[in-house]
Image (cartoon, rainbow, N blue to C red; front, top):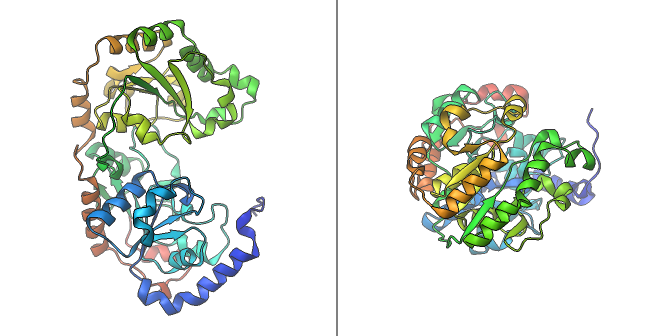
Length: 413
């Protein structure tokens, strides 16, 4: 038995919408049966791989059967204005109808993000759970072992087509997540196709990822954590302030969304250091406008390397991380050249960079971890989806049986 707090989608209005969608579905199935739905986190954003893939398709090869799900109050709604005829509003009757009758989903998040997140007991949710799914990914696998959400053995969220960026990543998906090679495509990420050119200023971008072991800490416990101590020392380092002042560089420290509770403790009074939140500026723009990226275990490392931005991994807690989270890569063998493990070494790396900026050392990492470095990733994704479609056994809406045994009918992994 599951117990949860009520939310806005428990209203009778949404129950009525779902009922109406179920009544209409059999009559419009033949018109919408080839429809595909695409979305991002909580169906509330249009700034990641799903959006860039959708925009590329609509601009280069318009697909009137591809609809983008978005909330009406999304902060990214303006990004979808050029494609508004292909936009469907989250939890509208049309949205619920298309979840029922659509052919499959394409997304950079799990299937549950296409519907009211906490609602598991509804006809629409049952239909959603059994839809074929193309997973565009949010980032690149490597630095962080993932939970079983996208394992091939996960009946609800496994991907029928799993998009990757290299043969190395493809091997991770087969060896650790349990997929068969035919269900994996090596294409590159759609957001890397974005041709937008942003001037790189004299800026250092710092973005640590979240640690699950910090989630339940009290404020006092958090302030004593190695995580807080390490980044607080960086933000208040007199040597860093001097380096920034003498070189004309600025340092932007971006908070992970899960930092909201603790962001009040990350403050600075230095004019060359700025603490920002992801709601202030899209991560992609902040990244592209930087000359040096400092992270730890975040997949933004791969974006930085793809864009030929020098990157440093500040892994002061590497031993603890490997024990609690784990990595698919061997840090010492695969990434030793860009890893530092103590604050003094990090400051030295920063000082060396501002004195002698260079990107030449990135070539080896690009060749090793990316099969393609161009702006044709979305085209390759389209080709991969087309090939997958031709070989997949799609079950028509009116024949779909909402039983666990249905998975045996599907040609997957």
